[in-house]
Image 1: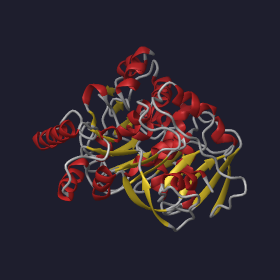
Image 2: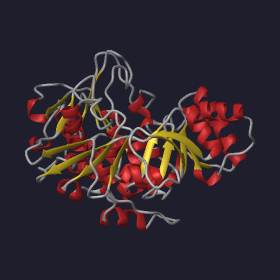
Image 3: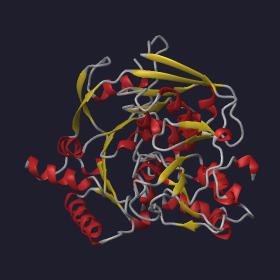
Length: 416
């Protein structure tokens, strides 16, 4: 079996599972956030039981509109806070939190071999740790909260092998954008994307989180990486409970094997209005921008902020550009502060925000007006995603975003 199949089999108490099979699995963690937990709570209450299956395995993260942007959101968070307190759930907001897909691994709540479900499509992020994690609707999440189990259809696994050596300023964001550009937004539909190869072995954990995060943008059920020394070093200082490592059998037949030599790949730009609409930065042309967003569950980690700060150091953001920098968590924010990155951002003329999803979903902290163009390190650029349906969103890595903030147009980092 593959890594994913072994995790699913173990959580279904079966010796073997195969693609297409329907199973019931026990979950290690159930997650919902301020936009989805309300529906899950309503459905949970309708089930008619008075407690969750395990308070230590259910977590609510307030991260999309943090701090509260209006009365409606404030009331929603208040009700979720009260529910979490009543049921003794893990509850994160404001000063001890950040974006869910950044803080859950940080706090050791997701570990290798885990099976995690979340009421958010980017729950697949945790595959970077060798876990099987996937997004589900709020009704399914309510059932998981109540029973500790959920149904699953075993997905086939597609193996993605990356060969070569990456150029400077090319990282996980570019690899996943390039891959989605090659296979399309439905190229891995209801499959597990298993990322392998010597290029992957060299990637930092932050880059791996980025790639796993955007597996859903290829239609995948999950993205997953094998556990190696880098994974173990990341987990070692965070794990507070035992975990199990699974490895793909050498004889396993994948549904597909995709191989890429990425030695000549440039930073990738996803044009409106789809993550598959990608071009190398050298082929972008002259595209003036109004706003830059550096952050999100995709690229709001410390390595991302380091890349952006390296570009912005001793430079000024273009006078006609708004540059918004959002650390992915309070831990990331504090480390960036200690390293002097925040000072560089502010001296360059950037806006630095408390950790929040905010602009990624057009919620707050950077909503776009009609006809505005934004280059963003987020994961989606659908019509209306960040505000006006007449705005345009371009996806890129943090270095490209920072370089573009300086010049006022989409720019290769090498140019600055």
